[in-house]
Amino acid sequence: MTTGRVVVVKQYREPFVIEEYELPDPEPGGLVLKITQAGICGSDLHTWRGDQVNVPLPESGRVMGHEGTGVVYQLGKGTTTDSNGQPLREGDRVMYSAIKPCGNCYQCMRGEPNWCPSGPYSDAGEWPYFTGTYADYYWIRAKHPVFKVPDELPDSVLGWVNCAMGTVTEGLMRAGAAEGDYVVIQGAGGLGLNATAMAKDMGAHRVIVLDRLADRLALAEEFGADYTINIEEYDTPEARLGRVLELTDGRGANIAMELVGRAELLVEGVSYLTNGGTFVEIGDIVRGRTVEFDPSTILRGKKIIGSLMYRPHLLPLMMETLVKNQGKVPYDRIVSNIYPLEHVNEAFAEAEWNERQTTVSRGMLVP
Ligand SMILES: [Zn+2]
Ligand SMILES: [Zn+2]
Image (cartoon, rainbow, N blue to C red):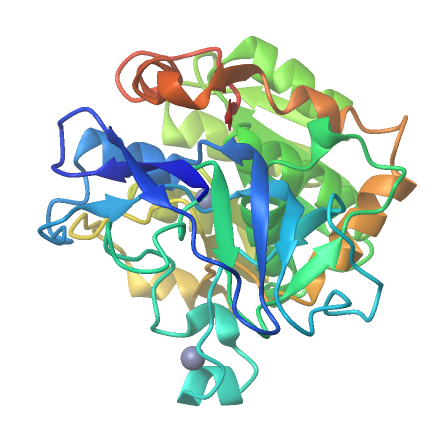
């Protein structure tokens, strides 16, 4: 009998609890991964902080962790390949979809599995137990999108692919990112660094990144940012808009992306747009925060769209982008801190970025 640990949030604003469960066999067509890395994402920090109080927790608590990667621990009966038909063997490194689409609801049938209402998290203690990535194992059901990791990629660039990288790639695609675009990125954390590199990869002519930390902005430049704006220096929305206009030939950006998680940045982000431009809301996932907004500002074809997670077919494409950009983009510097799984509470305390700024770009838990 194999057992493993699972990190559970029992109550908001209380330390996470580590529970131990018996590992079930994989189902036919499915597989079990041994988790090698699990990322601490902004959304996990919201859970930690208790920002999600209006999303009630089940009585047994909820499993934690959605991004990460692992190696095949056990293949289910009949599982011989990944979703692209590549042969899979025990020990192979695998990237899985962090969303768990049901496959037959209205959204899934429309090709929008990332909007499927079936959430990524299960109740703690509910079979098959290993449904979050802050755990020793991850139980993957049959037909779930999984892709073999290319041999060329080191583990150090894999932990955030199925959340941060996927989310910003999807957002840029939904905004119609194209050659010649001017793109403004609000926030230079894990999302912002990925968005910077991906926007350049998709042909953006100029990428402008805003943050308050000089070292993050310096890193954004290494990820391809053409210009950075330190919001401590440009410390009013008017000053920042003025600088964005200066850097976009006076016309504004084609795309602005909110990757910080502050509601008021919607108004500011829309102000950066050129006529016909698109503002992409990604960061502000906490319910109940509102802004005052003047609708007349968007009459000239400006669009506000939201984007959440990604369509799983992007996973192998993104890994190929990582291979292509090896040695050019310092992807291995997104993960700044690695913690053993049993130090999950300490890891969250350090990654906490609200109120006091932190130097942690992205923390990674390693079982
Ligand atoms: Zn995430
Ligand atoms: Zn569905």
